[in-house]
Amino acid sequence: LDMVEKVEPRIAAATRQELTDQRASLKLIASENYASLPVLATMGTWLSDKYAEGTVGHRFYAGCQNVDTVESVAAEHARELFGAEYAYVQPHSGIDANVTAYWSILAHHVESPALEEFGARTVNDLSEADWETLRKRFGEQRLMGMSLDAGGHLTHGFRPNISGKMFHQRAYGTDPETQLLDYDVVAQQVREFKPLVLVAGYSAYPRRVNFAKMREIADEVGAVLMVDMAHFAGLVAGKVFTGDEDPVPHAHVVTTTTHKSLRGPRGGMILATKDYAADIDRGCPLVLGGPLSHVMAAKAVALAEARTEEFRTYAANVAANAKALAEGLLRRGVRLVTGGTDNHIVLMDVRDFGLTGRQAEAALLESGIVTNRNSVPNDPNGAWYTTGVRLGTPALTSRGFTTSDMDAVAEMIAGVLKSTKPTTTSKGEPSKAKYDLSDEARQHSLDEAERL
Ligand code: PLP
Image (cartoon, rainbow, N blue to C red; front, side, top):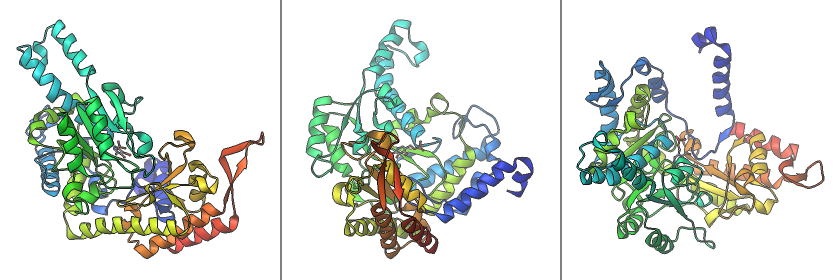
């Protein structure tokens, strides 16, 4: 940063400040973590200077021998760590991984059969009329994923998202009473809708999913099961989720980010059965821009770290800490979606404190606790103000927090929520954004954050 200082001091200052901020507050954002120094260092190299569109051994640029090594090693670690037949480590983010996966599934199940039918070898051989037919078939495909307010992600078919435009979409939710997935209901909805792609996975569902069951449901209608394990890839890598809870043996395609519970660099990845390999390999440059070779290198380092016994202990601690946090909050009268957790996420419902998610998020931030507001099922406050606050334990577990530390964190959170009162707008109406937090509670929480 001393070198950066001489070129653009504002960037050096913001970067230094970020380190201070990330150390001073408690990072409870469920999708964030702390990557190791070897991972961070690997991202800051001249591998960034190389263009390498294409894939290993099949590049559109000369001189890619070192990038070939990087991509092969990263893919090898990914295959071995997750027991996958095929791994694609190029996607720049989770969303890129999902879009590439959808495009590959469409290519595999719609484009390839159509080419055969039209007697064409590639799309270049198609007549205008064939093209029209093919485009229509792409547009007719269906996708079903978990609804946003039940904990699904925007890319799982949310209408304004590209996934909701690539496909006709319908969402499955959770049981209104238990807030848990009801597999019989999902099966019924899938039977009625008959999607080409059934997406499982979540951003804000605090429970494990039975992927064997999801595969059975997909098989009944011949759907492709795609699991987005962006959030819980670290728990899969660390063997906390095994058997029916491990998506890799059950899904046709698995997508992930590498920077959340997996603790790697910011990026994405796709795992799949061999059948999809050729289509996914065309992802760059047909869907993705040139690979970030420095990030693929950092993915390889992170995946090597995730193969260690130490990482398994870490993953087990992430889940144990989430449970301790949930139990601590429940003991102190905080309502939780589904009544608890069995993964790394705890989703608080703050309506009993008279607060919106936005008010709670802001009061917690002032008190040294960084979270994000989140919808709860059938959220009365909508997606902007929300009624929930999502918490997650991957980052604090990387800092070495134990279950008793998590009880102290639960005490801090409950203390802040109890000491925060909603206020009114300038027109005297109840505000969904403004609040009063007692100075004493804020200071107590800040002191605790520093102690921890
Ligand atoms: N998939 C899921 C389930 C996620 O939770 C997220 C991020 O929050 C993504 C995909 C998108 O990841 P990225 O931000 O890397 O594009």
